[in-house]
Image (cartoon, rainbow, N blue to C red; front, side):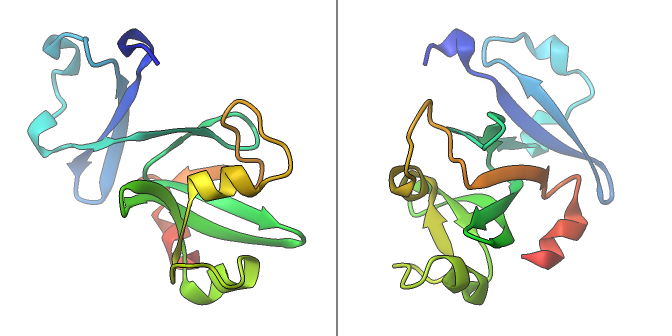
Length: 141
């Protein structure tokens, strides 16, 4: 990936419980972010992977994870040096029995375990929102 192709997202709390998400390229001038308090904002890291609809998976996304006939929600987090799906331990055990970690599974594992591999797409994932704009989904994890 070239730097000119990298697009980052930043989430900024504009008032109590209300967030805005802006996209920017690392070389953009600061003036294009007037009104966004960058030192207090959280940068959402891209995972380099896409979901089943070829949408880029970003840290903080809420995804549907479908394995067989089971679909559950998970959050995309960055833990243990890798992007992960994170969900309740009991739910993770339902779809990934004997998973090596209690409540996370890495995106790279999901990618390598699928039947077909193309263009960094993880076919069992579908983005349904993010933890900032769809806080109600967090209760379902």
